[in-house]
Amino acid sequence: MDDIKLTPAETLSKEPRRWIATLLAVLAAVILAAWSSSALESNSTGGAGLSVAKGIILGILHPTTDILFTLGQNGIPYLLLETMCIAFLGTLVGAVISIPFAFLGAGNIVSKPVAVVFRVIVMAIRTVPSFVYGLMFIMVTGPGAFAGLLTMSVCSVGMLSKMFIETIEDLDKGILESLSASGCNLFDKIRYGIIPQLMPSFASTLIYRFDMNLRDATVLGIVGAGGIGAPLIFAMNSYRWNDVGAILLGLVVLVLLVEWFSSKLRTKLMRG
Amino acid sequence: MVMKPMKQNRKVFVLANGKTVIEKRSKAPLVAVLLIIAAVVSGKVTGFDFYVLVTRISYFFVMIGDMFPPDWGYMSAVWTPLLDTIKMSLLGSAIGALLCIPAAMLASSNLVKAKAVTAFFKFFFSVVRTLPTLVVALIATYVFGLGTLAGTVAIAVFTFAYCGKILYEQIETVDMGAHEALEALGMGRLSAIRHSVWPQVLPSFLSTVLFCFEGNVRYASILGYVGAGGLGIILNEKIGWREYPRVGMILIALFIAVVAIESLSSWLRKKLT
Image (tube, rainbow over all chains, first blue to last red; front, side, top):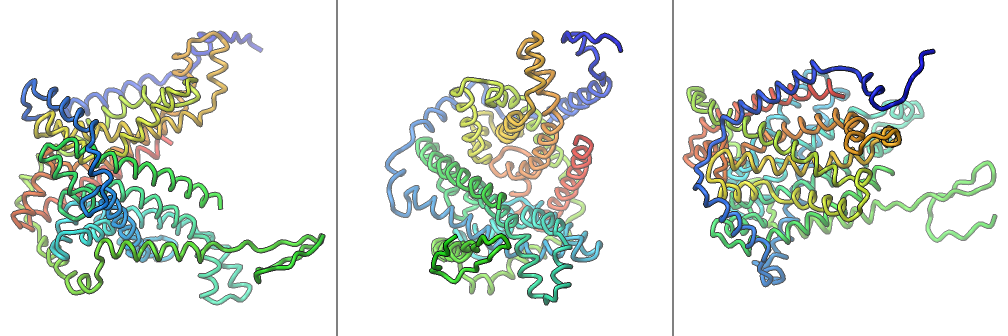
């Protein structure tokens, strides 16, 4: 046997050399970065940017405290409650819409071409930016939280059905076979064979999506579809940075709390 | 073994060795009641109204109907903003991914022993991730002026927080044996990390960045709404002017671009893992 000296330098010299591949990857990255930096343009105001940034940050760091704790319709607690309600019902309605899409898009339930067609539809639904849906639903319901709720639900359909499809395709069919071998009818098979297999994963996906919807709820505000987004954008457009700070503080605390709680819940669900 | 009297009619199984197993009480009714209460409260707060939904939902489909057939001739004007959107998300993702590497290293508890430092950086990542991208983009337009630069900054901030969080979680699950061995042989800290931790996390980190980039392309089309460049500007304008066939054209172009990028990146991600 050869003598192997275990000095770091010697061991490292035996590291596989893939410098051509590395070089190519780096080169591609640099070229792409150079190409994309050609799009950078801004109507900058010269040196004023820094002082503007300083003013904004100072304002945000000194939040107005009185709107933070008032309980009326304009207080932050109520707005946060409304945002949470939009996110909650939006997720729920989104789930109701996406379950049929998920079953029709799962390759082990329907034939391959049908599944592909439904997947393309889901993808198309997912591509449309959320503010476009917001503007469309405002035509239906008028501005307000109801429009926001409907927007949230349609925006959730894309991700929810994608995750649901993956769960459904992982279904263990052996259980169904043994159930029908022991004489269960279709209803029994769904109740004892399918639902227990899907439930934990579906619930976990829904909780995760609720988390995301809460975070995205500000997008709705800019089109006037309710929640905390609208006051936030108004405050920003009128340079009331202290109010912006207060709203952001409330939003950040709420999102962090919900995130902590939901990750606890999801680990519990996953462990059964 | 003494059998305790059962209060509820839960199922009791007697095993072959004489032990009894009691069926666990189901939490489903409690969860269902809580969910129904939450749904009812949410319905009240948001003004959910089935009647309005059923009677007026046709307006939604009328708008979609107006988008077809799309105005194909308008495509020539869509190219530049579409490419701007892609460039914005490409550059923003690259900048954010590069910046998050040192911060993620400082946030992982197996590389940095000081608890205060890791806790601070973890908290920093969480807070940045919570900031809505649209708000960051709007602030960026005040600082950098209207245009794609503001959008790029917003995307970079989001990518920084998202990829950073996943990167430090990956670093913390890495097998530290190789690192310890290299350090024991007298290698410096940073080069030990470079040769032991880095190769372990690199493939999954690149795949995270690619995944984030996919999402960013879709998100970048929203940023135009606050004036941060890209497809959103013309999209918002055409909806405002009710030129729905042109809106349809923009959406189709975006759809094709997103599908192309997603399939390219998922192919790359499959190669990586």
